[in-house]
Length: 243
Ligand code: ATP
Ligand code: MG
Image 1 (cartoon, rainbow, N blue to C red):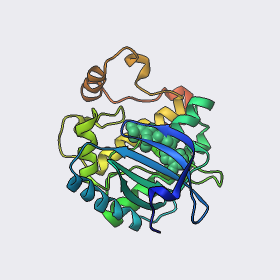
Image 2 (tube, helix red, strand yellow; image 1 turned 90 degrees about the vertical axis):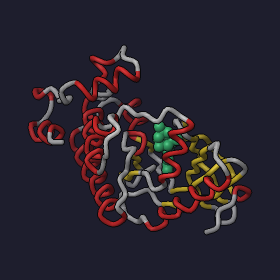
Image 3 (cartoon, protein in one colour; image 1 turned 180 degrees about the vertical axis):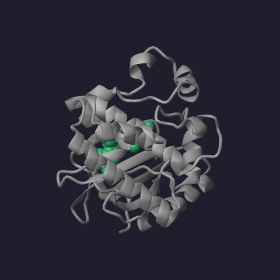
Image 4 (tube, rainbow, N blue to C red; image 1 turned 60 degrees about the vertical axis):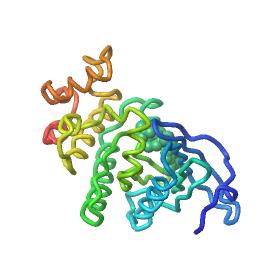
């Protein structure tokens, strides 16, 4: 499928993040509905072309728990990539609307995300790098899939140069600037699962008034967050404690 900007008609906005905006679009030649992410990057054309080449790896990432990739292209100074639309949306939105998730749904999410991460790492040596509720999506078939993983080192760099590239879900070793690997995704999954269980960011109670820098210092220096054991099954508390 050769995707071009002219062939895509925007239907509605799905959301915006640090680096880009995502909309629901129709691919006119095939009448198929897709999600299009547009990322504005102030970089040399050569850098943009490199990002585009790197994104092609996503064509090879085929797994039931990975959002399908349809293609990427450059348009003016923007990079776009199109992916499968996940019609129920991302976990942050669902959590904001419905509050904490029931345990059985958290179980399904956990297994699905781990299968997706395991596939990316064992088959493609890809570490996700940005696992968090907004990058875990659900569709009305009840499937849970992950998106926005770090296939393009150049894209990660370019976004980091353009925006303050921090996230509340970053592991201590990553914040410290040490080498990091799949273990960092495990940290992010733990924080994410705690958030889904509590219905709020797990460090929030103590950290509501912290600046970004203070939050990062807290993650690095303070004891690991844990769940209140009386409110959740023991297995689940133990599971999020082992990281
Ligand atoms: P960040 O930029 O920090 O990673 P983010 O993940 O919220 O944050 P985007 O990746 O730009 O930002 O996504 C914006 C929103 O678009 C997401 O929160 C999600 O709800 C929605 N979205 C992204 N991809 C899809 C998709 N394939 N199907 C449906 N909705 C999507
Ligand atoms: Mg995202």
